[in-house]
Image: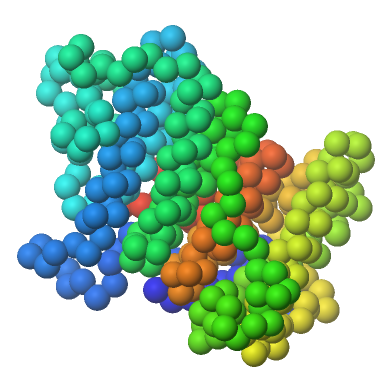
Length: 351
């Protein structure tokens, strides 16, 4: 997969003064090097994909059990069905026969339909009706479990897993979970990045370009939040802008430390950036913040696939945080945070 080096600033909608960059986006789950139509080669991602599908089946079963009492959760259930369709590239989920409901116990023997329409599980396998709080906890736990497989997945599947994990975090928040996910890995510390024997710096040593791009994206975002902070008027928005700015400054500094520890010179911020649209008041400032976070999530989804496996959790954490802040700033919901393209076999999410 091509690193995001040529699309960082364009993806953010903040262009370097005096020039622009081109963009391209790969399919999130196309296995590189696999000849078209080669169905005989074993799928090296099968164990990871199977675990992801089993976890998704369990989520779908829980939603189906709760939906009769909470029909407002249908959009979240539809997102999970889209996740299943994207993850199940080898054996698409069959359409339930007329008169039969969907079933899924997380064992892999029952396959919920991927259409987004809930079905009634068979009475012999129907799970106990969960509470909304229990469903939120299941979303959170499932999101965290997906990150545990990042190192075992191919780059395209790792990118998809990170996106689906971020979606699970957003679902948990929507369901009322106040602490949706723990960090997959700590941010690079000064001591970690200055030691050549440390995993973070050593594994980044040969692949600094993707981190340079991430750093450039954070430079652009810090600039953008300077504009946001100058235009918002509400005390709550001011606080959110300050908090977001501080978070991006910390992430920028973390990438600088990692690059320095790998023996590279961190790229500097540009002298100026062009905004994607005029920002003249609090409303347009809020839209800019949502835009920045949404596009930055795309940068970090690409970073998951571009860096060595020990570094994937760092990129996945950054993706999750940007997805959460995008939601906070009113970005339109999506089933696949950070993926500019819709995975094949799934319907386009409806904002």
